[in-house]
Length: 432
Image (tube, rainbow, N blue to C red; front, side, top):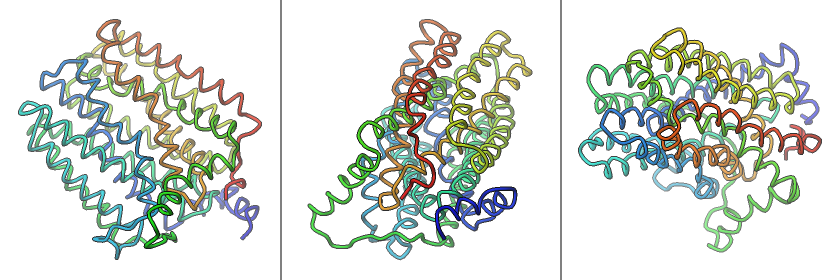
């Protein structure tokens, strides 16, 4: 099938239905669960546990740096692309690495449960770092798997089902663990979450392995050249130095408003007078359902509309939704304000997810799927994480309102870069 025929295949209502009906769409639902499950457990949910354990605001912000594993995952992504794990070789390249990462995640979460912050904060942070590393590795494998099992024209549908599963993971690691923590404590909550890993583990066993060529027993120099140098050289040679740097900068800035606000969200909810159960019901159940609706709309929009305009809409939506938190700050303890704020914020983030995923998927070369996508997705979180780690000090000195306003305005550089790249942005048919 030609690229033009592939694009036509996924246009119109029948095309959208065909994209969502792919067998890989169901697989991505459960793999999305695996990716979403650890993200809050080493991020926002973790900050709530630390706050209740008496950890200082500044330390809570600094503790968020354990999630830098997600930002630097491109450093070990070449290993995922080029080498098979001996203990899991029968599962194949992608499924073998995914099984390893899932088991490593279980070990990290159980270690956090048995070494809480009240017992030893350094040991707890170390266990969190292990879980974060495993979660980042899961992302590397799942992202590569998604790109390799379907053509670029169908990536919007796969991104939507992946995001749907991801959101289910957020419900479990957000609302689920908050409800459990309110009843039996944080430690048992983290142990209970490990049981959910059975779902993606079983999926790994029954899912098909995508076609991925791996050269075995090559000299170390050749392996380094192909695995660590080749992906980056290919990316810059295909787009040219100027456009490649512009694309990387745009991806790096896209989620800045969201990332700046994320680390202090849970402390803000608690300071606004809400209990863990209320946060679970509004933020991690209702909010996630709204996010799922946004994700499905975003996945549908990718199959119907031009990517450039969708990027503008998604970026503005994510940024402007942060201003809704001012409404919540001015009405502390009011459920209606909480619901209104989370409605706008989660819908905007849900819509932006498939748009950004589909855009980044269209930039990678299938010969270097894991490494190039890991680079892009790492950059999508890095600036916000760097700044977000200091957000606790901003709140301590200037209050939450200052954080909300600054995070909203931070979208301006993103829009400027997009305007400069407007006429040169790649289309789906440009991808090798």
